[in-house]
Amino acid sequence: MVHQDLPITTAATTTTAATNRKKLTLIPLIFLIYFEVAGGPYGEEPAVKAAGPLFAILGFLIFPFIWSVPEALITAELSTAFPGNGGFVIWADRAFGPFWGSLMGTWKFLSGVINIAAFPVLCIDYMDKIIPAFESGWPRYLAISVSTLILSFVNYTGLTIVGYAAVLLAIASLSPFILMCLIAIPKIHPHRWLSLGQKGVKKDWNLFFNTLFWNLNFWDNVSTLAGEVDNPQKTFPVALFVAVIFTCLAYLFPLFAVIGSVNVDQTRWGSGFHAEAAEMIAGKWLKYWIEVGAVLSGIGLFEAQLSSCGYQLLGMADIGFLPKFFALRSKRFNTPWVGILLSTVITLGVSFMNFTDIVSSANFLYSLGMLLEFSAFLWLRRKSPTLKRPFRVPMRMPGLVIMCLIPSGFLVFIMAIATKTVYLISGLMTVAGIGWYFLMKFCKSKKFCVFSTIEVEG
Image 1 (cartoon, helix red, strand yellow):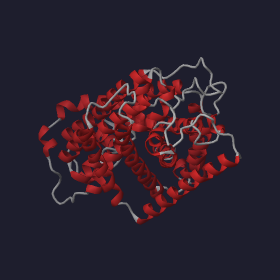
Image 2 (cartoon, helix red, strand yellow):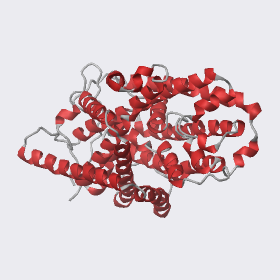
Image 3 (spheres, one colour):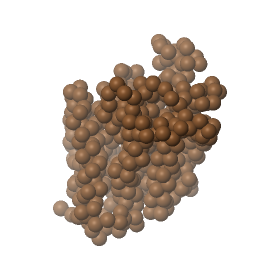
Image 4 (cartoon, rainbow, N blue to C red):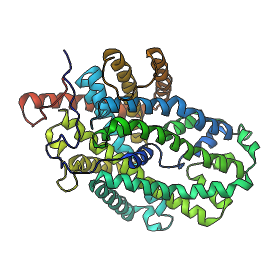
């Protein structure tokens, strides 16, 4: 069966869209991508604890070329070829048909909303140092719930507002690191950068690779916003290129500064160590600033990733994967209020659970989605060589296969070392996703729900 031409599902083509709404421009898009992926150097410290200074520096220097750059290049090519809000769902559907498109949607949506739940909890974890009542009990639950609802409302007010808020949040959360790097310069001893690690401290490669992986992925999440971007064919490649460089430098400069200027036991390099290092380098005032920056970074991460989840559901409804109800937009703000509301409800539910295994399972599902994404990219190059690609990765098929095989091998390694609990939860989520596809197919055939008449048929 032959695919129909895929519609460009943008704000202008949906029935409930307000045609005069502003679209995302280059600068806000760069910072939204930045918060989809990183949000600052918070969380890079365990790489030093796991493998020592030299390997941590090499990891953040080399890993972007074998993971971040390929993922960003694929996102740039496919987002400009299919500039709709379905993003990676559209890519999998065009390559392998609606079943795989739907499953991709399930994997990515669940991994997204579960990861979002971590950010309000992170913010409250920092705030309970100032307000001890937030450490446990109903005040903690209330604080998490209220912060989640407030941040979700900000998201509801519009993607343009979220985009410019991301610019301000990035400046505020990175400022203390810029200061720390400058103050550290006279104290740096370059030979410390070459240290292979403390004697007697065993290398933890599992922690090392996981730290690199989860600090440098999610580049494709922004694809679900493609329909909201001004001139996506030109804007997307530039935004991704700048965001990759900006993100990598934001990780590397603090790493060089702290490793070179602070001499501490390697085991102290846990998450949050940068704040302790700031106190050693400049004093308590900088430590507090970095802790405030962590909260601001968490807010930016929450907003960027909630936007992706909300617009993903809208995009899936636009192309007939979900009932038309999911494509409803706010008349005032033009935002996908159904997608934002559903994402928020799931996020709140997960926030109150002991979600270590659930987050690991969400990351497992993300890995499955990435393997499908790499496959879809290669298959579309072979299947549709004449497809109009405003941005095209400048390689022939053998080079593209190698570019995708290296990160795919890494994904398989990450999945192979998962626990049995993660396999079980991921399996159940996948079965639920398959069930959802057949339920939607049944609802469509019996006309129980109204679906968009514009769809991609396999």
